[in-house]
Length: 246
Length: 325
Image 1 (cartoon, rainbow over the protein chains, first blue to last red):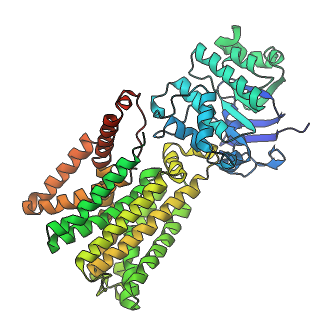
Image 2: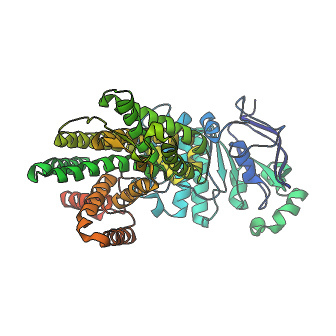
Image 3: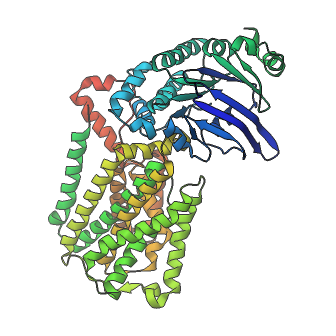
């Protein structure tokens, strides 16, 4: 089976800082992959490199469904089927909840077919925001804004969904709900999901495979239970996280 | 419940009142004031379409107005072409200038677009003075022929143009195109992540805005029968932006009301002599301080909501809904 996304020799320097060092990844279709690492490990930078928000250093290879993503603007990457969320919720302020999801479907693959309005309402129901369509996005709770981000990302009909710390800022009940939502989306739509997260308990239950980063490089990769026991991971991350003993 | 029939009724009342005013109070002075207010309405609504919706402030809208006016002036006085030809030509020239400034600056983050527009209008004003032999310098170009000989006839033409342009831009603002422009105002990065070519939409909205502002400039030239470098002045752009703020940003119809209110206020204050500017400025400060969302559009939204609540009392009990533009 050929990989959905292949990444090789990914480097990124910001001046003297080597933020991403020779990262190589292969994401298979239908997988749920977790990217683990302490703050500053380069996780979000990897997302930004994959989605065209920043350009990698020369020599990198990023291929999605046989198409190189190098040099593509973020909107072109999204149009090829990669949707992402952001570490901090970034809804379209000034738009209603429904309009936020409709906009998600207006670019690239999202606008290919069907009634956007009806599809947006279905997605909102799927993420548990039915009845809140007409609300101003500003009045949503943080947890609901996270759900809205996922609905907005799904509206683009992605083949690969990149979630950047989806549980950040949520309480334990909201984390369990959102985790169940991600599982549902993955199971029902066969969507490939990659997520960055710090909340280890939910993270480990959710993912099929983990890639651990530290100082911008891959230090371990494999099954969740193996990666958390990897000495390099324990040294770099687990020992410093409150969730580790949980 | 949709407020669309209420909006149509409100617009109909507005057009009827504007059309009847010169009939009920027949005076060339009043027709003149109303004509200028309507032309400012066109410029305010076109500014709002691009800058109000996308949030990318244009501090040099006068550039498009001046380019449109001078295009009309040159075509009519230098080449002797009929005045009506200048309308599409002025739109084209304004679009060219919009592309010239928008293509390199709207793909960048930061204040580059706002500064480029501001500089563009200042540079054009200077160029009109430097090349005085061709442009007429301070005096500008004189002797343009009127588009419509009757003053009242031209007023109705300008009013019809304002209604048509505002209706078109309002329809666009409520379409998916307008939704994308408002999303760009909300968050450009999220738009890009949603597969939207943000630069294309910003440039497209600038082109549409410039085209109609240029046409408004040509109409103004054929109304005043002359053009002068003062049209490019920064104060023209600032006046238009003020009208949009008073009317209600990103509403499209609000700036029409803002333009008419401020032109009428300026005329009403003429009797106050030296105090005029002081009173005008204080009125603006009070409006912007106490009504940061503007005067016209929020007032209309409140009226519409009250009317809808009276028709369907349950609506009044609903949770906070996002107001439509």
